[in-house]
Amino acid sequence: MSAAAKRTGRASTPEEKTAFVRMLSEKSAEAQAANDNQQGKPITATPYVWRAAADTPRREFLYGKHLCRSYITTDAAPGGVGKSSQVIVDALAMVTGRTLLGDEPDGKLRVWLWNGEDPRDEIERRIAAACGYFKISAADIGGRLFVDTGREQGLVIVTQDRNKSVVAAPVVEAIKATIRGNRIDVFIVDPFVTTHGVPENDNTQIAAVAKLWGRIADECRCAVQLVHHVRKGDSRELTVEDMRGGGALGNAARAVRLLSPMSADEESAAGIKPGGRFQFFKVTNGKSNLTLRSDHADWRELHSYPMGNTTGLTKPQDHVGVVRRWEWPSAASMVEGLPAGALDAIKARLRGGDYKEHALANDWAGHVVADILQLDCDEKPTRQRIKRMLAAWIKAGHFKIETRRDPVKREFKKYIAVAGPTTAPV
Image 1 (cartoon, one colour):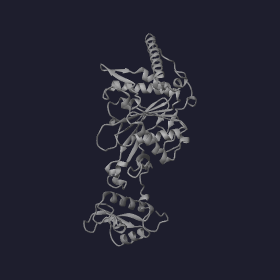
Image 2: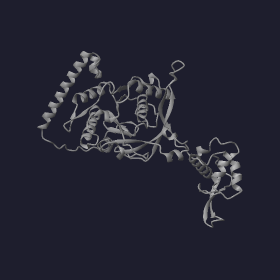
Image 3: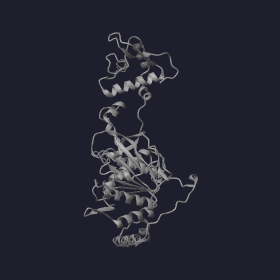
Image 4: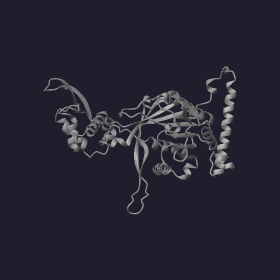
């Protein structure tokens, strides 16, 4: 067996493959023998040796506060949301040392991305699109990215035999040899289900698989990220309990990121045209054992990147989805780029009558805004946009809320009135 094959854990010729399998079998036998020897040893208690907090080693976070050396973490999302595209950009951020999606990598890391479902050309197509969008060159990657697919080599580490889980020791040893040989910092497995052959709803067996991945992370001193699916359901925001199968994987992971599709209500609130929400998803912290949990949501957009790979006149170029950051539109952003004099015209109309704050009122102030800006108030996204515009103008001091009696219903209602001059224009 060549020195290169021993170093990288890969074999190219049939002879090297035979020698590699023999070597792994010998290692597996040695590991089993060591385990058998351990069976006869007594269990001992290890005395705690006190040390000051300042003398303890820091946790080795590798990517934001999500990936940490020696631990497994999980990304969970429904199919088609964009989780595979997300981890590709995450991987590129780590190997380049650049902050592409908001999480800061701990320098230029070595990442092994293993996709269990897609062919190599599709994975490389997505990587090329992301590199094109973020202007990443081969020199930026610097040989630190490793990419493999389940179409070419499997990574099933646990199988089932007569309702019992069986560890595929040669595969486990091959994974560890490859991680060590290539000095991998982060191993991304997409998706988790392709790495085992046990029932997903069997918590005991799934726990054994998760524990084995944790042992690989610990022994190889790398972070292992497992991408997982959630159960089918409505478009509500996800929780850890929505992860497919039993709860053992979520329990074993030290951190869980949840990728939730944008809901119809969020689509409307953001002023996005109906049907446009399928390009957006949000990333929330579903679980965090190593840091404080946060209810903050990071939004992502699937941008269609033109590949420029047109062939002749009959075959147009591909467009490939690339995940990029997307900021939830602020109230102030809703009033940017309006025609000159539009705000003054709205003020003049509101001064001449009584216009209510509530959007369902027949005399809602938003109808004046829609009329002057020539917007269609019958569309829900447009109504949401107008509400946010009014909120921005009120915050800037252009308008104010007054509570007074409705002359018709004789009830107290809230009205939008023109305020005095402001020094904080929007």
